[in-house]
Image 1 (cartoon, rainbow, N blue to C red):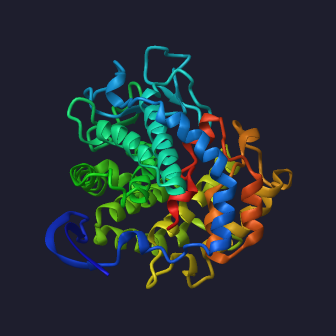
Image 2: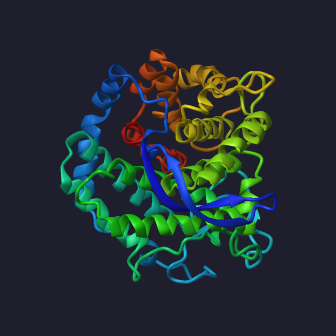
Amino acid sequence: MKFKLFSIYALNKSFKPVFIIGMVVLLSLSSWNTNAPGDDMYQQLAATLRKDVLTEAAWALQQKPITVTAEVCPRSAGGRHDFYSEGDYWWPDEKNPQGPYIQKDGMTNPENFVAHRHAMIRFSRIIGALASAYKITHDERYVRAALKHVRAWFTDAGTMMNPDLQYAQAIKGVATGRGIGIIDTIQLMEVVQGLEAMAHSKTLDAKTQAGVKDWFEKYITWLTTHPYGKDEMNAKNNHGTCWTMQTACFAKFTGNVQVMKFCADRYKTVLLPSQMADDGSFPLELKRTKPYGYSIFNLDAMTTLCQILSTPQDDLFEYTTADGHNIKKGIAFLAPYLADKSKWPYPHDVMHWESWPVAQPALVFGAMAYHQQDWLNLWKKLDHSPQDEEVIRNLPVRHPLIWFN
């Protein structure tokens, strides 16, 4: 058992952080997940991914850091260090070309500014690949390469990103930023998870670790206090799920036990009971113009949340609501359609229908949690290197090796 001194945020009813400093008894954070796979399943996982991991890591070793400071959009109301993106489904009004944009749900505008989003996805892929390769080989060169990118994003004054998302998913003529843009930072989850996987490396210095954790502590404060953060937290569909998932991930990384508990309680009392139907489907996602992709995305996010927060005392994989809803039912509902989407009984997605499914994290996390070999077999057969930008953006876990001890 380890003892760690750190700062935590206690959340009162108005959701304002109260600063508390104290000695908190914790199990090592990396051991909180009770759903570590048995040797056989983990070996299957590693064998399936080994070749792709080492190939991607070889690419990652050659990459130089690119952060939000590399490219600036003139439409951004923020500064050089601020992340900026634009609402995907917003387009110029043909009747008023110079006026505010109008929405076309499910239809992505290819002229939107996406450079910062692409840079963050690239960053996530690089760290995920390098950390996965380090887990396989214990070669310190992967850690040395990763730290160049980590410092550029979080601690180097000239290139770092500000720890907030005030200018994400802006809409020309409508909003300089929105809470809905917070979903873009799900890409940072595999960055912190990668750092956890490399935590015992002799190359990962204490100064860098402290600096990165300070960045994420500030970001958690923003997520839990800014109106955009509160809006996203209260979103009814996959946006609310993704707020909880990433906030939980960052809180676990920084040791913020109070926020972790808040997220676990929110899964039990809000997300699961309000989003899942009796058959395990997600009706709010089925109403969208891309019901298949959004159903997959929300299931992945909810299952990943269970993976992040489950403890010996509070295993979210085993949690069931009073009316019988649980994450296992959600995976069981969607798995047949991941195996054969021709059986999908709902409308097809208006875009990217042909690109789904891929090796969805819900399958691998579910397989490990419930010892479901058929789910793991299905995961093995699916695409582990998707190329579609929409799929990559909506795939919260691309490097499963770093999510298990």
